[in-house]
Image 1 (cartoon, rainbow over the protein chains, first blue to last red):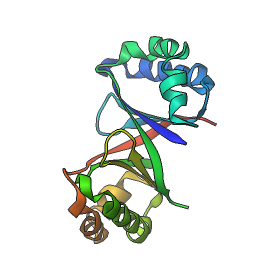
Image 2 (tube, rainbow over the protein chains, first blue to last red; image 1 turned 60 degrees about the vertical axis):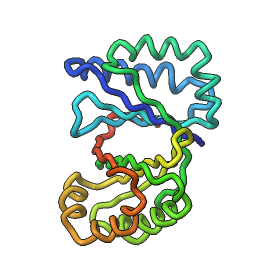
Image 3 (cartoon, rainbow over the protein chains, first blue to last red; image 1 turned 90 degrees about the horizontal axis):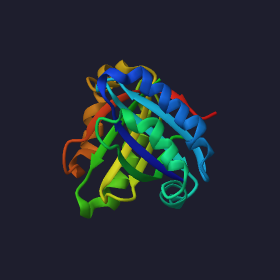
Image 4 (cartoon, chains in turn yellow, blue; image 1 turned 180 degrees about the vertical axis):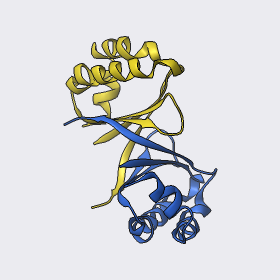
Length: 100
Length: 100
């Protein structure tokens, strides 16, 4: 399992619209992607307009190849891309440890 | 429930030692803190020396007051602080949505 962490900063006056678009994007696009196991949407308390989207993929290639190079990526970006203040920072992580 | 996301960059030649210290820190300090519900340790695939520590607190004040202003904070920093290349970036998040 690989965690894709997406660090999103949006235009400040569009939070309500973005949150609807993001929920629609994970419901209709991300959750249907090959190897997508789970997701979480987190909203910052300190930085208005900052969101952390966590997507758990079965393999790294399910994200980098199957999703990013497949048809779903354009659908996803069409929904959420218009709200981005800057391009999201994306990085992948492995789980080293967790509480029981 | 509040997510504390700790974005850590360590000195590059000390990953093995840091990972032991971090595990010891969550086992012996963080997991004993008032209101600490769970944690996850994530290691970057793309950025050597970058780790994302997720700590789930019952309330924001369990972190910002009870932990940061209590005696456990010095214990925690004594264990993991020597490995930091820069001060960790810390931010709090609420959960807006998640997969079923």
